[in-house]
Length: 112
Length: 109
Image 1 (cartoon, chains in turn blue, brown):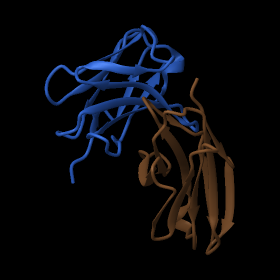
Image 2: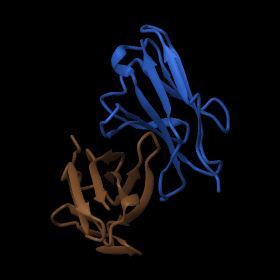
Image 3: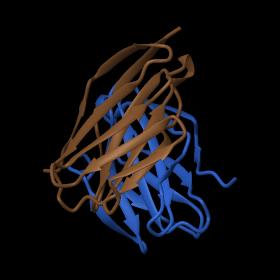
Image 4: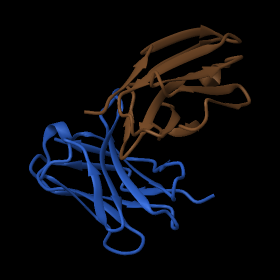
């Protein structure tokens, strides 16, 4: 069964550094998402991406965040200058047309 | 902005009993309502979903009901088992997917 994959599984970075989180969505899916989950809290929507552009973004997704689909398979989330409060689990998800979302295993980001 | 309220935040039941989790959404454009189960340290896994043109859906021990007029939807788990213990999230999707705050379900053997 096809799966969404994410790398790395755990990223440790220093405050102020840039990080790129990578996702490979399911190959025939059209919609891509990033979510974040702070430890013990709910899943929070960050951004959705369709047809090579952002379709929706939340208030969390400020100028420090950007997304890219640099080729036909990868979908990346970049945080330009990380803050302590960016420490969380980041989930990528994808879905086909009008289908269910499939989540990746997540990347745990720790900002020190 | 859009919001999804989920109750209760914690639910403890005896094995074999039923569990009910309720959600309310605010965005009238929401037309798809998935429920996810998340075990500790794992990704959310879809367990059941319902679309806005359906009032009820059942899959073995799990059922979901939707009242579009009241903007309520609920998850029902019957004959609970210890392996049902997890955090359950409801969500509502319009232009974006908004998650509820989660319900931590404990099933005591």
